[in-house]
Each structure stands twice: as structure tokens, then as C-alpha cells.
Length: 65
Image 1 (cartoon, rainbow, N blue to C red):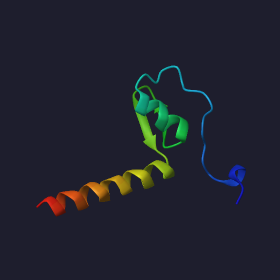
Image 2 (image 1 turned 90 degrees about the vertical axis):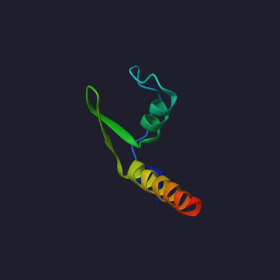
Image 3 (image 1 turned 180 degrees about the vertical axis):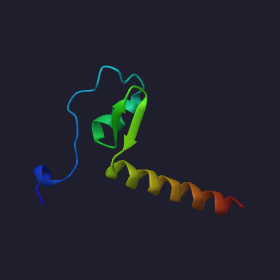
Image 4 (image 1 turned 180 degrees about the horizontal axis):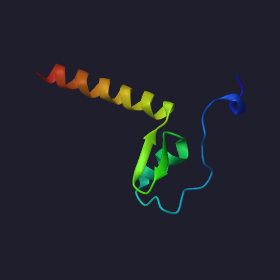
């Protein structure tokens, strides 16, 4: 599958209202999208990443006791 056919909307430039580095990176990578002032939604790629991080943290917490 070509990248142009993949359902991922990335940005070349950082939006002016994004001040925090992690916020800039998530917007540019297509993990989140701004809906309105202060409202963001997770895109499918972002949800997958979030679930993977949740599983890693959960496993480490279970291993720690």
C-alpha cells in the first residue's frame, strides 16, 4: 500500500497554537486533531499508540506488585 493511500493525515509544519513539544509532535504525526478551542480528538493511529502505552504500563505495574 502506498503512503498516499494510507488513512493518515500528517502535517509538514507545526501549528502556531501548539506550544508544548509533545503536542506539536502528536499533531504532526496525525495522532490527534483539534476540534475546537481546547478540544482534541484521538485519531486511529493515536488510539493504537495510546493502547500500547497503556498495556506496557499495566504490565510493568503488575510485575512490580
